[in-house]
Length: 280
Length: 293
Image 1 (cartoon, rainbow over the protein chains, first blue to last red):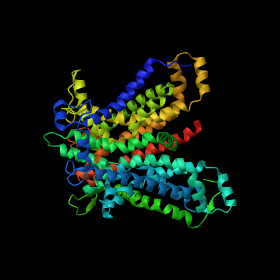
Image 2 (cartoon, one colour):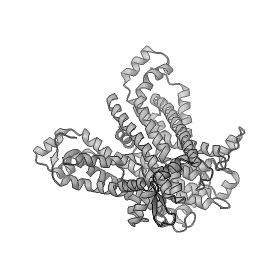
Image 3 (cartoon, chains in turn cyan, green):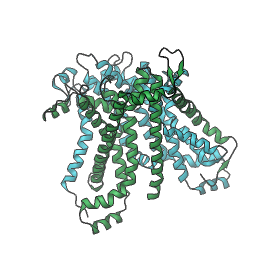
Image 4 (spheres, each protein chain N blue to C red):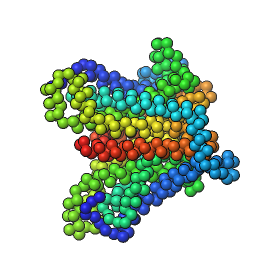
């Protein structure tokens, strides 16, 4: 058998250092005051301003944005993350159910119309998308923020793959017992998909939470800012600032990454399974 | 499709309605608008537009600025893809062999997946900052005076480093699961036939990983093209000037800052064509992956 060498561990430790160190340094820097950072540079040890800085960022408006505090942004990020993940799962499960389990004219056409969206990420059609959302009066609303993001068919594709792998005998048995489409969906398919739903929920939550370009365009009203959207605000305040508030900026960065990181770490096995299997 | 199916004249349409409505309004319509306005020259003050045929495309493709951005995007994509794939593969091969502490290594190497690109960009800005950044001090030891945001090469270096950092976890997860899928009997047979671990890797493990590798190649190219928007935006700090930017960033700049609707749409259409080709390749690879497993 293969004998593990010390170099293998060294390589892995170097990798871990490369991945972890930037965030640890960011965290340490966020616990000092701005003047210390400005004078001495980035900090490698924890400082004494942890509570103070995070309290300022969370509960005081006026640092980077004039109207909202970090807590409101946290709430908006939650709404975007949950709204996007739940909306996407419901809509794509229904659509995949129709495509896989029903025989109807135009099924192939519907299939291709939906899957054509995989071809075009939002980034390549932002300007027209923005104009349409604007003409519908959805700028600065939660629905304008969430619904256009749901348009992509990734979720439908995942669920279609999964439904195809469910054995046909289940449907036959259910029909012999007299189950209709709704009962089959509710009592058999949804319970069977639980792990898949959990995995897709994690992936979609992280995806929704981390959206940057679309929220930047669609929310100009500060009360709708998400944490990730707030990053852009930091940079605008920095331009021309005497002593940039590195500490508070880094505290905001830590807050913006904490919830998705926690979810990915805690539900790691579901997440990895979902990511690897759904892309097959 | 399934052999046994329900029949109903209305249920499937009702089920598909929400998805189709969203796709039509927020996807097909804007895509059609983009294609249409790429043939028009919009009046900057909003008074109508004139049909100009392919002028927007020829203007774009002949402009030196577009060429510069396209070249940068190409080089950027190349570096991000190969560095993140290479580092992730090395780490996955080592993590696959480790017995003690395997799950700790795994968690520590993959959690960055959840960090948003602009947040990664902000961390990059901190670490590469002119006044406070430790990496600037570090490279100064070797006589390299970094000036992020001023020097074109230095800024590109910061962007590539940040983008690679953010992308390693995805590649690591896929490579590790690919490695764990290789059967023990194949590995044992290989280790009887060949004593050199290095050779065994290149002649047995690597070819077996090739389908995963091809698949990840497409994923990484797509990432470098589109998902790095946040990183680029944060690192250039809203001041593109002479800084390196990617093609997607230019679509955004010309459309929202420059108010050049036709030019921006023409660039969108070109990008759509590129994504189309990438996706077709990806679909063919997915088909092939099924044959392998």
